[in-house]
Length: 107
Image (cartoon, rainbow, N blue to C red):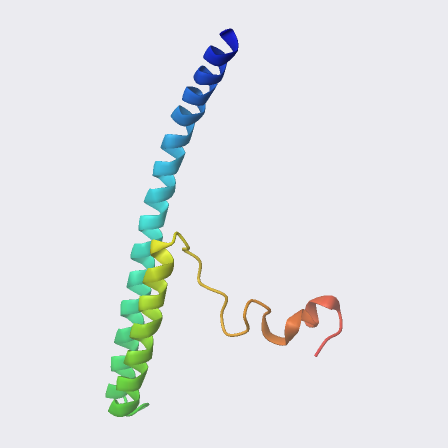
């Protein structure tokens, strides 16, 4: 009987300690979500400026916006799944060149 009381009290203590840390993580996730949103909006603004400067055509900008919208939708799905990382990137997490420079092999 005493064993069950001890286990129940231990569970209550663990939950009491876990709840504040879980809420703090949620605040950090919300902050990250907001920062990623700002980054996305800034990229859209940069695209507009590139069109104004004549660096890209309006047609190219439309295609880029569509691709950016697809990537943002994918990012939103990852947020919903609890993944707040930048993603693996073009090289699928291997980095450019597979890390040869770090191993002393040079270029």
